[in-house]
Amino acid sequence: MKSDCSKCSGLCCIALFFSKIDGFPIDKAPGQPCINLLKDYRCKIHSQLEKQKMKGCIGYDCFGAGQHVTQVIYQGQTWNDIPNQSMEIFDVFIIVFQLYQIRYYLTEATSLISAKPLKKSIQCLIDENIKMCHYRPKDILSLDLEQYRNKSNHILKQVCKLLQQSIHSENKKGLANFPGGNFKGQDMSGADLSTKLLIAANFENSLFNGTIFLGADTRDTNFDDADLSEAVFLTQGQVNSAKGNRNTKLPYQLEYPSTWK
Image (tube, rainbow, N blue to C red; front, side):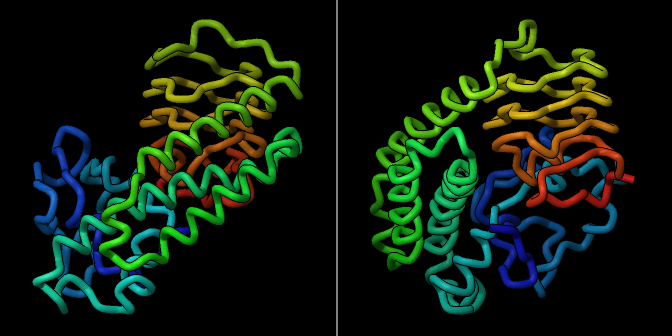
């Protein structure tokens, strides 16, 4: 479940809403191509994203939904090939992206020993997800995504609870929506950082064994020399949005961003 932009058609650069204040080139409406999208679906300023402070672009990751929509659902046809279906393609991409994001979390949950009692239920949700991602476009557009999301969220909350019980975690205090906080060298193991605002917080040389990052905002969070190898529900997008270096330890499935020197 990794992005491969070479097999996509720039869907994230067209289908999504952009806001300049969030680190994108300009304010852009959904369905409007980014000003830097080339005819071959590459980004004109990809090598300059850090220099131009395009943090929104740097931090985005589709979990592989883009190439699935392009190569599987539309069998290699792009919004340029079938312009009369372009808005349908963009709408399908947005739904499939959300399904892929949910599947990413569910897949990781199956690898957690503490979640073993829920493994059968989790696998059923994964199987349902895969099946939905192979529906025809009209059926994808008619999905009750909220119902599926609610079922998945219910299971993921149970997984998080079991995980914290298994490591006898005590809730870390003072972390609720605390941008810019200094937690250098602290042991954050077992902390539930789900949906927390960690913007520009300093976690240099900190430990994150069993720490839950589900939906946490890690823009400009400093992870220099930190150990995130056993962090839970940490995504490539969150890593891309954060700061770190080559001494930072990441979970095996994640890659070092080019911006981490």
